[in-house]
Length: 456
Image 1 (cartoon, rainbow, N blue to C red):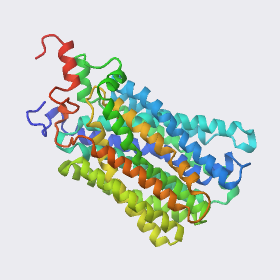
Image 2: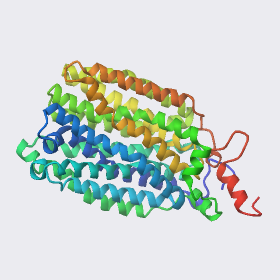
Image 3: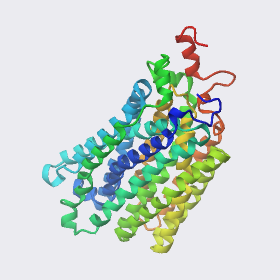
Image 4: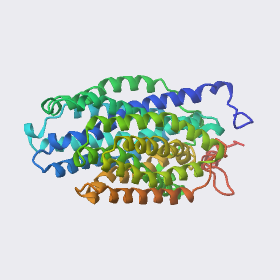
């Protein structure tokens, strides 16, 4: 370790960039798979898998299958968090992308309700659960890998590329659906919707190659060498870091802004206001394109001024701007829709996305970092995953029903603000000191002293 926390030893020079690039590419590929499901749920699945229902009910059921994936995320967090903290970050990153790729490809192969009846939606839910299991460890694994390779004074900047990659995945997923969405219904509902899912086979192969070449983090390797790896990371986490797990869980409901924007708003615009699918998909593409620039900007800013002020400002901004975005959809004014969509999701929401990958990970020691991030975020994300379903139930079917959805979203943003405001500020803490107890030493270091005789 260098004497100066901001200077990396020669052996690690270039590793932060490589880790960030690998996290970016892997997350982009992983979340391409995850978000094509959300788009298909909003536009197609109600007709393909729930054709016997009223149109509104079919859409609501399809959105519920999107939320089911979020139910599986906490389970994936428990399993993959254990694997990552016990056996290494790299193993998790390879496993998650393989599981996601296989499940997504098989969605494209499913028979329809007309062909096999109720077995079709049942199989759809099973595969969605597998997607959720994979996503439960994806971001925590990528964030832990990047954070532990980064210099102390640039952790948020480098870890922001994990979330930057998810935006790229959303762009790719939405862009793939642009030509699909304009197909005649007989083609769209038979084979057209399947194409994006089949393409996940290429996604899976590319992601496996990229992630399999990653090096394990020096932090984990050092822990393994000195025998400091916990046999049961979850037990250590819940005993010594339960308050931070709870804090991350509550803060992570900010993801509701993303699911409302990606799934509910699209369904509301197309199915209730009867706007054209193609321009609405372009709103998502351009907003995510703006986020590609905004996310590392906000991450870099938080490395200079702190995590909490940037995070809180982004959350409050989303609480206000969601009213403008949903209202603009109700008016059918494309200029307003594009303006509010890009500003809210592409710029303001990116302030939260650029900060939380570092902020959440910095609350824990390396010994339980992946488990802490995975469990905390995925329980919060599970709530966020059902936000479109809750919004649909609150909204009803009227043109002016958007207001109730905006209120629900704003409340969830304020819950996030409360959780973030009570957290420690961590941006100035050296990486090796993260997770330290007040007046004590990092848990990993304390345990290593106990388990390695003669260590000073």
